[in-house]
Amino acid sequence: MGNRLTDEQKRFYESEGYLSGLPVVFDEAEVKELQAVYETVVSMLHEDEIPSDIMQWHRTSKRLYDLCTHPQILDYVEGILGPDFFLWGSEFITKSPHSDRTVGWHQDAYYWALAPHNSVTVWLAFVDVDPENGAMQVIPGSHKAGLIKHQISDEQSILSFELEQGSFSAADAVTLSIPAGGMTLHDDAIVHGSQANRSDRWRIGFVIRYSSTEVKSDMERNPNFLSYMVRGTDRYGHNPQGAIPTEPFARPDYSKRIRKTK
Ligand SMILES: O=C(O)CCC(=O)C(=O)O
Image (tube, rainbow, N blue to C red; front, side, top):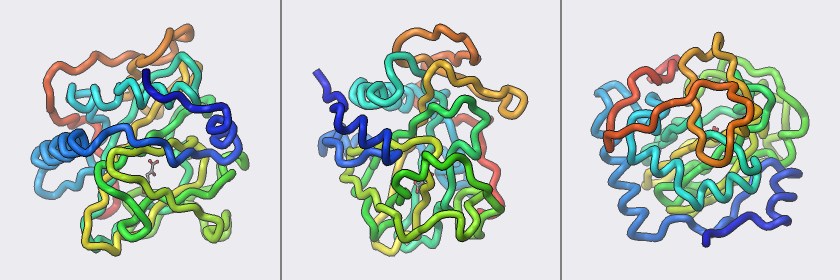
């Protein structure tokens, strides 16, 4: 029997918009396997690509689909979303040693054509992640204030949009250090981002997105959207369903991130 979120953890997530400090999901040997998965993904990239350019690996690669549907991860997500939810997004967000690359402060829900806002992200660490190698930071409680205006982001950011200076207080940020094989959870409206990697080590994270079945994708804004029911029953039937991949690894070519610079 896997771990379930306690009532206290659920209350913390509800009030702060994130949850960290969970026991690791994967042990040392499993982390080595995850790192081999990452190497396989990297070997499939084109020369001018970085891992975060290609999204939705779960749609084409059974190995990544299986990771996104790991029972322990789903048990934790169920503690937040309740019994009926689907998987729809996955991507690697990495920074090489001493990379200047950042993730500008943003709210995920600003990017997504999903309503109502009831989605959660799992941030799964493939290596130890801490302040030195650019761990994710969150502004506790910021998910309660609604969506804030975004602007075109700084050149170093992996993302295209970020929050305007002064629209939140970066001094309130909490850094989410995670041991390899561990994970955090965050709300789709929490303000979050990450700084450059100042260390000699890689920073490798795999983020996985899930939504409760009442969430509907606006197919005009996101015609490629596909949902994968991973727990419970879909009583709404709002979204197109994807087919579970059969090949262990294949590139999801249709899910390329559009960004300003390499
Ligand atoms: O990895 C990061 O620094 C940010 C991740 C992120 O923006 C997300 O998962 O929504």
